[in-house]
Figure (cartoon, rainbow, N blue to C red):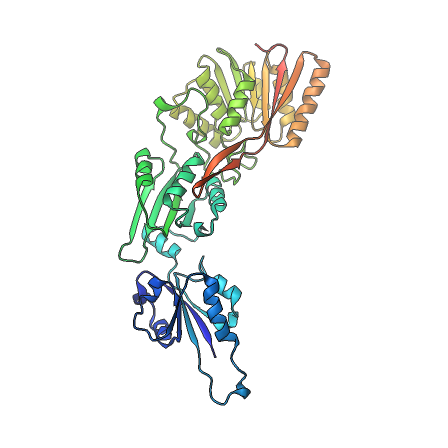
Length: 452
């Protein structure tokens, strides 16, 4: 009876195969594999098929399995075919095994795995890997890699190829402008004599420059390990006056939303406003020197810090209900050398009564208390003051519009306007560029009388 044995093999060649598998190889009547795999057995007498297109190999193997005559028609015992197909590593882990299983009768297949590239990589860097997010760039799954990076995955392993090598992955990571930091490992020729394992910390500018200047083996493994507590290094002398990058601001350790960047987390974990949205909010807020400014639901303190840097004589109050977010705001203020932001741990609207009357208000998070918060903000806002809110949901916008319309009917000096924002950022993908959309946002600006 014909049989197909799919044998995983590493860069150590026959030395990495067990004795039973080596015996199978010796008995094989047909060897299928890449030129490098077949070169490990130069004196083997079996017929050889160089594995190029998988369809060609299947075209050779399938007739050997299906075209045997029935036993009662045979005058002599039929010749047995023993086919060995060599593949790299574990055949069923991002390998050709799944394609062979789909095209050939599973009952005729036997798999003999070698160590996978994932096992080898994580054992080389001495890190447990049961919780790793695995991605193969050889199939073009760049979108999956983007989602893993934006989702703040702790461990990511990527099998690279010619079109998506370590430099392309590094550029993609840098282009996402994430406020968390990864340690970037490149593992080349795992298990071979030319094995090389190196790492770079992506918050180190010199390390990043060195990484981008290197050349790597075509089939490398990239491992990304998130470094909790490590923030991108800031050079204050090179920061812009306005429009700080998203990565400038640290994020809470429990922040694991997959749709980065967004406005504010609704399930815990503060995040900065996307820079482009933050700038539009600042334009609508129109802050001036020597004002009192409230930032309700301040998140990472990004908007409060932008206002404070722009108007150093103003006093900015950043209100957050969680202690961890409050600590984060204070840490971001220290890193950016901002001294006119007061970080307040408290729940709105109750905490708002203790603050001086504001000239400007920006509402970020509300904890489900939007109508109550708007009521207090409306009663406390100074004449000529401005209140701005950014939202991604129609329900939140509808609640705010009901409130402002009720108020403007009673107080004709109140007015509002809406700005709908749809933005996309360019992103390098396997040598090309495409757009990554940000969540659509509506900015509501409410003016109490004539804004000063």
